[in-house]
Amino acid sequence: LVLPPSDYILPENAAHRPDEGLVLDFVHGYRGFDCGSNLFYSVSDEAVYFAGAVGIVMDTTTRRQRHFVGPGNHLMREIVALTMHPSGSIAATAERAFDPHIFVWDLSTMATIRDLSGAHSGGVSALAFTQDGKRLVSAGMDPSHTVAVWEWKNDKRQDPLCKVDLKTEKIFALGCNPRDDVIVACGGRVVEFPR
Image 1: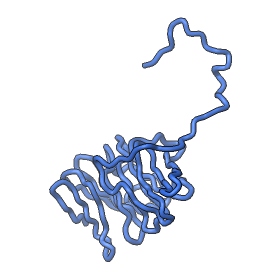
Image 2: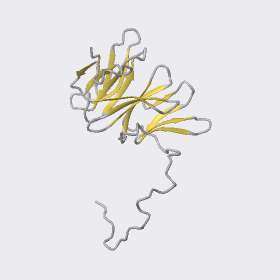
Image 3: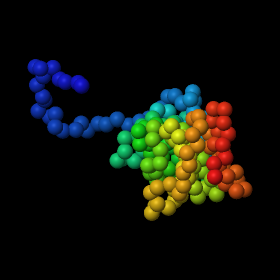
């Protein structure tokens, strides 16, 4: 709790916002110590990664960055998972939070396409799109390490298409077989093929 000094006098213009504001220009850093699949290249040859609660798209030639900080109605938490859509123009990030959100977003506009939540608790440790890009697979940090499959393009469906509890150690990576979309979940001392 932060309180002003007891003798503090509120300025007359305290109710007005200043004309100036802060704009995120450059993020220094990269999260690579406890999560995999955390760097991709877009269809336009830009590096896509995350640090803290920011999704970053960087032109590696000019070193200019664009930032995804989530939709305006949601305070982003620490990002711990990232995946790239097969088109190379869409990414999905997920956060560590009590009720984590997965955001699917456009790399050119930095706009949120879809906000998915409700399948996991504690965070999302891994994400993967299916080969055709129609579904998104997520692995939770909950004690059961739930794996969920989302029809992310279907705005009418708010819950996952299906989910399964693996009851294994933390899942570090997810993948989908390009021929039949069988999911592969990899973690500490385990490789699972949930169906």
